[in-house]
Amino acid sequence: MREIVIDTETTGLDPSTGHRIVEIGCVELFNAIPTGQTFHVYLDPERDMPEDAFRVHGLSADFLAGKPKFAEIAESLVAFLGDASLIAHNAEFDVRFINAELAALGLASIGMERVIDTLALARRRHPGAPNSLDALCLRYGIDASRRTKHGALLDAEILAEVYAELTGGRQASLALQTAHATRARGEGARLIRPTPLAPLISAAELAAHAAFIAHLGEKAIWRQYPLPDHAAFGSIRSKSTNVIEAEDSERDLREKPVSAFSYPAPSPQA
Image (cartoon, rainbow, N blue to C red; front, top):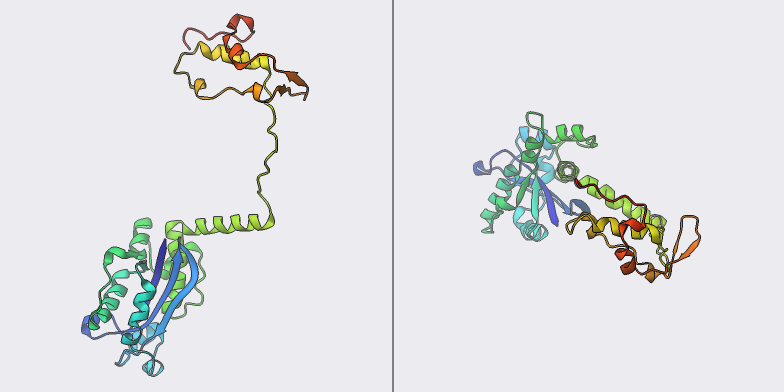
């Protein structure tokens, strides 16, 4: 399943008051494992950069001047997202800004039904605990030392690791990597015998067993397990590796009375 982890940086908190997106970072996942495909762009917001926002992400108006405008990258962004599910932390914030930019261009908005909010996932899994991205990294032992300031692509990469922890995807990834490594070393291969070994059970033991279960009734669970076919092997091998010729067919063995063997008959309560 294809999913996209997405994060944005903006000039403020509310697009309805004129704030704009200044950075978008996306990381592609397939079955919760990063594929290495990303989408990253800085954007010229066509406005000033408030000091409060600059302290969060460190993107100045001078740095963003001359960068593409959202209208120039909208088509590429929509194509990269495709119909994949979107994963974001506090997703309503990012989706609201992206939809505001799309609406200004007359493009279709992103429906929340295709969005997975990792903040909501974390709150359900860790109720009452801090669930910021930094707090989740600390809880799961994810290295966030590079995160001195917010950055859309870096935050998306980190969020992909957090998402794996929240959903168990990291365990699946590790298991897959272990399987690949094992196959690469040639370990764990199943060797198939050209001729199957004959059963170890003797003809007498098989007959005693067949006679015993005949008295357990038609619904006895033992009837669900077929008896070994000695005729298919021509002989059976004892535990001492001696070869014993199987002269009786399975049908004959089943017809022998219990009294012919030392195997005790079941009690009436059985």
